[in-house]
Amino acid sequence: MATLTAPPALPATGRVGLATGMRHTATLAWRNLVQIKHNPMELMDLSIQPIMFLLLFTYVFGGQMSGSTHAYLQYALAGIVVQNGLFATMNTAVGLNTDIQKGVFDRLRSLPIARSAPLAGRVVADLGKQLWSLVLMLALGMILGFHPHSALGVLGAMALMVVFALAMSWLMVLVGMVAANPEKVQMLGFVVMFPLTFSSSAFVSVSSMPGWLQAWVKVNPVTSLVDAMRALLDGGATEGPVIHTLLWAAVFALVFFPLALRAYQRRS
Amino acid sequence: MTYAIQAEGLVKSFKETRALAGVDLAAEAGTVLGVLGPNGAGKTTVVRILATLLRPDAGRALVGGLDVVRQAGAVRARIGLTGQYAAVDEMLTGTENLLMIGRLLGLSRPDARARAAELLRNFDLTEAGRRAAGTFSGGMRRRLDLAASLVGRPEVLFLDEPTTGLDPHSRNELWDIVRGLVSEGVTVLLTTQYLEEADQLADDIVVVDHGRVIAQGTPEGLKAQVGGQVLELRPARAEELDAVHRLVAEVSGPGAERTANGLVSVPVRDVALMPAVVRRLEEAGLAVSELSLRGSSLDEVFLTLTGHRAEPERSAPDPGQSAQHTDQTVKAGV
Image 1 (spheres, one colour):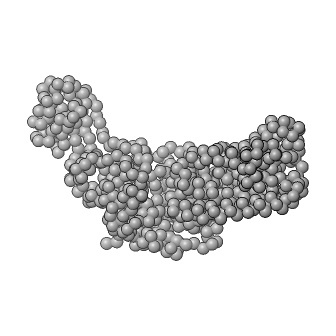
Image 2 (tube, chains in turn red, yellow; image 1 turned 90 degrees about the vertical axis):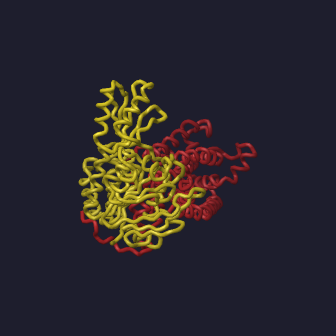
Image 3 (cartoon, chains in turn orange, red; image 1 turned 120 degrees about the vertical axis):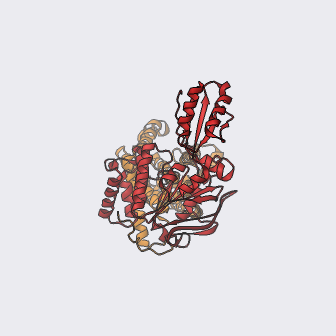
């Protein structure tokens, strides 16, 4: 090995150009996606879990909820997709936290690469995974008999879900940066995500809930998202809930993006 | 004289804990500097500052003549870091791990592939290259980690406790790799808890305790300061402790001690001591249930240099290290 070759020319501050930074991000996104190949658990998270949720909700609850599984699928698909999508955002927190604990994060930070690349690579890869489960669930839903209102609505629903997931992912970056270990991140998922997604309009009509719960459910951002997705997928007035959801997404992004970035830079 | 690593007055605190209280050190280009110290001494903090992962609160450091704070980017292009934990992605194969680093360092896809193959070959990992790193043994993982830090052909390599937790065979393999790198001109800063490791690899050693450098010098110089090996004996019959002690003291001269846990211990200044003691015990009809020759442990270095024993883990900077002993104990029914 000729070891003392000149290092690549770099500005002293370590700032790299946008194109180079994007290449670093792409490489790290590749890294996060190629992992799936070697980790069956991740494939399960991405594919089997959504399929399982969809089948269980449809065939176990469907008959009781709506009189027929078919009618319930038509109603609940939006909710199931949203629940799965929100759970999937936790991958970002778990992944980043694991990288920190395992020392991979230090290794990346000791390389002459764009400071933002490890973060951006993770977020981009997780959005890719998000999109994959989204397509999978919608496709399976249609196979099982779901009738989308319009093709445009389906595309709109996918876009909305991705936008909301991206906004949420900054909260997850923050969690991933400050959590003590990946197990704690998982636990947070159970104590926050489960109640948050269930106490919404995802699976049942809000009017069937007790008054005090309705009060919360109506302000729960997940309800806005589900209502918007349901309107886009199944028909109905889209404008109100979509705008509402986008506002929520903006609030999440505005609050958590700076906090996440600060936590990230502190780690750097 | 050109220094590849220079640090002056490094200070770093984490909340209440003062990890570094003014550390100075320097390594000449092409040599190995051993940073020796117990858990929590501040070794990892030194490495993290030099590798641009932490900013010092005070003091400055140059790596390859570049300031680690103000010229961090350029420093990163010249260094390799192998941390205490093998920082490989367990979900990726050996090849993919190295490919990723190569691509991040700006190598083209074919170049990155060629470099990965070359490193896997050099580190005897070719066959494992297709397997996920999570399935690797500890020694293989450490070799892959080291390979990953060499993809960019660094001038300066930081090895933070590279052999902690490795079996002796893997440790020897890693030592050989480090020697090979040094012979090619790489400057290595190595932290370790083991005097033996520093002895094997380092040209110079700094001993760190409580965030300060408490001694420095060549391995030979330090060993002369802390003394050599210690012979320990345990009488088979506890009531013969005094008799065994008297006999050992006759053979060795002053320095033989009775320890609180029923051992007789004596510093070995002469290789003939152990056989002489064994012969005399036999003649006197005194049986011992345990006879051991211990190398100078880090404990003894500390006892000698600081007057206190190396303390167990106190602070965050060096988490999760396992205490290990370099004792070579020979249990024998003499």
